[in-house]
Image (cartoon, rainbow, N blue to C red):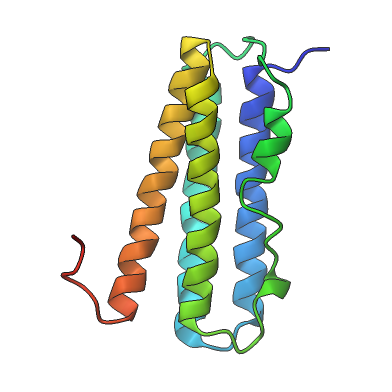
Length: 158
């Protein structure tokens, strides 16, 4: 059975759920109150991403029956954020370490979607990847702003 765009959306939804669990579990082990609050805010953002993907699927913005040209992209999508787990963060992890982890995860996801958009031949599939890359880029920029604020570097956005 060939894999479809709906299968890819399901994998992306599952990924958002895993991200929520990772950030939630990390929030439970860090002792830095600021890091804990930041991780909880990431959980909320990932929940928003999940809702967006579910809505896209429900509204049938894209033709979900489009077969994937290369089903291995499902595997690439599963690994887009790496094997991040709360064990990557020591219980005493600082807010800087938490932000670094989040930035790395978002960068890998954005890069994956950009590569997929560049190689997709079907216009709906290409547009989905472009939109997902833009969403990850927006999330990355938001985390980066928090990173700069944490380090007292606001105003250096150039």
